[in-house]
Amino acid sequence: MNLCRLFKLTALACCCHATLVLAGEEPDSSPDAGLRRIEHIVVIYAENRSFDNLYGLFPGANGIGRATPAQYLQTDHDGRILPRLPKVWNDKAGLLKGDLPNRPFRIDEPPFDLGLEVRTPDLVHRYYQNIEQINGGRLDRYAAVSDAGGLVMGYYDGATMPMWKHAREYVLADNFFQAAFGGSFLNHFWLICACTPYFSNAPSNLKVRLDSDGKLQRRRGSPASALHGSPKLHDHEITPDGYAVNTLQPPYPPSGNPRYADPHGLPLPAQTFRTIGDTLSDKGITWAWYAGAWNAALADDLQDPGVRRTVIYGSTPGKPSLQPHHQPFNYFARFAPGSPDREKHLKDGAEFVAAIESGKLPQVAFYKPESSLNEHPGYADVLSGDEHIAELIARLKAGPQWDKIAIVVTYDENGGFWDHVAPPTGAGWSDRWGPGTRVPAIIISPFAKRGFVDSTPYDTTSILKFITRRFGLEPLPGVRQKAGDLLGAFDFGKR
Image (cartoon, rainbow, N blue to C red; front, side):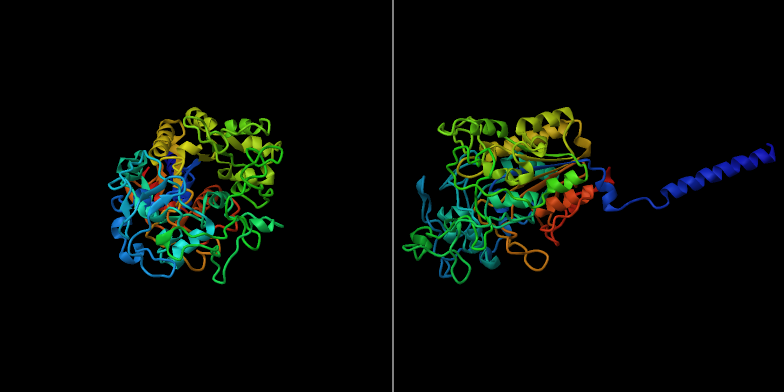
C-alpha cells in the first residue's frame, strides 16, 4: 500500500477515534441527564386518605405493624389516655359503633365490616384541628378532636385495590406528607403554588377565635371529655391575621361568581401569588389542569340564579359532580373568565382522556377526578375512585407517550384519619402551614424503580420540586428546602 495513503488513512482513523473519545470522554451521567428522558409528567390528585388508612398493610412499608402504643394510644383533652375510643358517630349517620379498644382497627372487618366499596361518614379535616390532632408529633388527639369519634383510627386491607398492584410493580413512597395542615382547599393551593391564600380585610365573622395556646377556643357547652361527644369550637375559615386556611369559594364560576347563586359562603378574592403554571408558561412548557365534570359544572353555574345546582357539589348518584374548592387555578386572577390562560390551561377531564389516547398530552398535566371518583369519605367510596385511577394508568401505559412519561398518584390530605408517622420538623422542613399528616404516593414510569418502597422524606411540594428540576423552572419560594424531589423513585440506568 502506498505509504502516503496509509498515513492518510491512519490519520483519519486517529482523528475519528479522537472525535469519538471527545464526544464520549465525559458522558453526562448526572441525575438530570436521566431526568431529561422524561418528557411528560402527570399528577393525579385523589382525596382524603392517610397512608395507614389505605396502605398500612403494604408489604415492606412503614405501616400499621410498626406502630407502637406510644404512636397510637389516643388521649382525652386533658392528656389522659382514653380507656376506649370515642363512639364512632356522625351527625347525619348517627351512632355507628361504640366500645372500641383504644388502638387502630380494620374498617373492613367486624364489627364494622364495611368494605372498600362502601361509603363511610366524613371526618373533620380542617387546619387547626389537624394541628391539634398531630399534637406536636405525639399523634394522640385524632380521636378527641374529630367529629366522627373513633373512626379516625380505622384502616383497610388495601390489597384488593387495583392501585395497590401498581404500587407493588413500581414505587410506593411511604414517607410522603401533605404539605399543609387541614383540608383539601389549602392543600390544593400548596400543590400548585406552595402558598397560603390571603384575604385582606376579611370580615370578622370569617375569622377563627384562638386561646392563649393558639388552639381553637371551645364554645360554651363543649364536652369536657371526648367520650361525651365531639368538641364545639369557634372555628371559621380565616386566621386572625387574614390567611384563608379552610374552604372558601373561588371568585369565578363554577360556584363563586357573585352573579350566580353561591350557597357555600363569601368567595375568596382573586389571588396573585406565582404558581407552577406561571413558571411553566414563562419557559414555554405546555401544561394543563384537567378536572372531571369541569364543563358540566360551568354549564350548571350559567343557569338562572334561581335554579338549583345539580353538578356543583352535586350528590345525585350516577350524575357528574364537581367540588369547586378542588380547582385551585380558578382562584387566581390570571385565570379569570375571558382570559386566554383560562381557556388554554383549565380543561375538562374528557379532554385528558382524549389527550392520552391521541398522544397529545402536554408536558405537565394535573388531573382531578370528579367528586364521585375522588375517594373522599362521605360522598365517595375508595374502590370506585381507585378503579377509575387504575383505568387511567392503563390508558397511559397503552398510550403513545408511555415510554417518556412519569406519573405521580397521591392524595391531597388525610381526610381526618390518623397515621402513626409524625410529620418532619425543623429548619427547612416545618413552618406555620405544615407539613401535615402522611398520605400515600405512587410513582409509575418506565424509568421508575421496580417493586420499591421509597422512604425518602417528601411532601406535596416535592412534586413542584420534581417539575421545576425537570424543566429548569424558577423555584417557587414556598417549596420546602429539605423535601425530596422524587428522584429517589427513579433508576434511569436501567433503560
